[in-house]
Length: 214
Length: 100
Image (cartoon, rainbow over all chains, first blue to last red):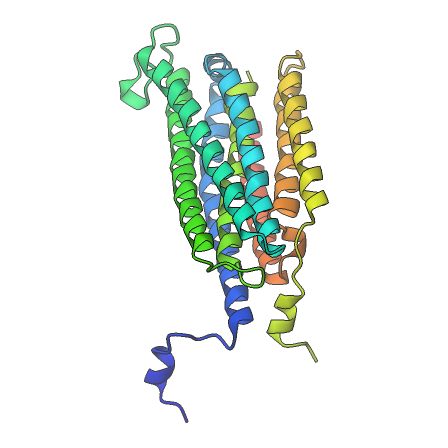
């Protein structure tokens, strides 16, 4: 009989590669579920405060730059397509084309962050900052301050996820370059893609709440 | 008797190139529709319509790009439980706003 210590310290607990990939996929879905619930809590906060300050939330939302939020929505959707397309290409044994597809994801992700930075800088120049740093004279009410505090927190947390996703994309490109992702085994690429799609889904809901529902 | 796990995993397919391109087209059209409708005065329905479109878009991303339709039963259960908790949260928020 195998001693318990040997079982606990077994570095490869999987019967085969397929079982390992199955476990990784399931673990990724659990992680994505927890991430979704994290953002769901923030959406809940938004809804609660919006119900309390409906007019001020609408007025504050009008001050966001609709074209930036909308262009960024298209940018993330197209980037999500390229992330999925990269996996499709690897499955078709085209790793070099997949690298270009992931490169497009990185370019679009950087575009998203660039546009977001432009909007942040416009807001900050007007005194629209989060919490007690809020100084915008045209909308001095508490509801507008709450809107922008949530705006910064939700979009800021989302932007951190974009940065994490871009880092993962760079890592995936290096794996492809080194030939570590093949048509048969590319589960890391699938998981990176899943993460990027979650980033897209979160923005799909942030956009109407922060830019369109005014 | 159930087949071994490795056979289950090998059964996992993926979205075809045609499905991916179709999903992209749907997402772009829905985004343009949402943006256009935001500038039509529908009152409180503006938010309802925008969120309704967002739900359809998120479903498209989940089922086609994230290949949820090809995922294992366990992964689909995780996604379903997450969705259930979100629905509970929504119910609580709507109840709070209605009874306040």
